[in-house]
Length: 437
Image (cartoon, rainbow, N blue to C red; front, side, top):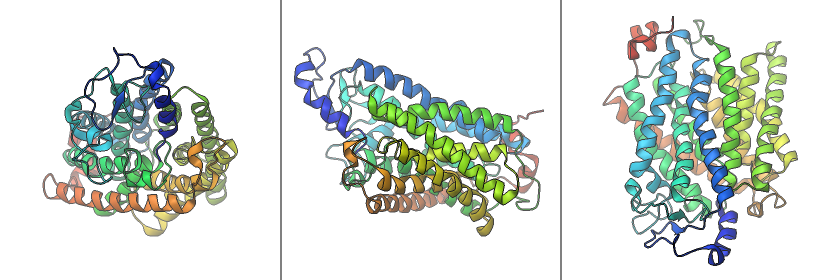
């Protein structure tokens, strides 16, 4: 039960009357369908692809860059750029095929095959069976932007202390070992989607996956030197505010683009996204004001992102009332994860990858089972909190185990952490030979 199934069924039903011999693909792979071009949908997903790409560069790069210390701003932005470079190439080589491919070499709903490696068989006349109204290359591009931002989110957990060489190896291995299987299981015809787990635009595939991986990274690497003692205040919250704005705008492509068409479902997802972000920001600010006796800009920005994360799995399954309550609940929940939980357990999740993306994604995924309604999406029929919890369990276990394996490979090859002296001097200069003066 994927986010695109309803649209696919509609387009397949009209394929006989719309298809032409010129557009027919001669030899389709197991995951493909003849292209039945929907020009309006194609235009919207082209736009959405650009919007989601904007989320990583420069959106997330600036959001994270402003929250670290001045001596580490360049290193954090470089990690976002590196995630883009590595994943875009891997997606072409084999990532797309492992995530959305099918065929005799696929493994029982666990991971796709390699039939479409190097985009073999993907042409201007093919479409993925999930969205036969789009050229497959556009479907490849749109999904690639999701794959790019996911490991970049994890970097927030190990910022200011991981070697750049280690982060490069981590991004590559994590994409293949963790992201691709989970993407296939939820969206690519795998067993979690078959169980009826609902994830409209990446609550589990992107945010819970990245959040759990971030928590494992924080625990394995250990805290930064001086954590809990030194002043580690953000260097430039103006950067973070600009980054948040870019994330908010880009998220409309993230969520509304996942409708697969320029239609009423996309409009609902877009409105739900904006509303949930606002509600979560108010929820975070209220709790912070009570807890710390003053509201902060960083808190407002974090609340916005927490709301965006929480509404992601639900955006195309709930009505605005559901979106409002999801945001309102997610704000305080993310504050608890980013502040109270981290304070109690004393782990160093530098930029709250788990506190915001892990906690927000879990809350949003579970509440999807509460607020999903068939008046918005027919796929909401049968949605339950229990099904959502099963899906989360599968994602959490695989993400945690896979991330630990990837970290151990990095540890015994590149090494994980910079030296104490390098960390004290700052990663901008010691890793990149650059600095902000």
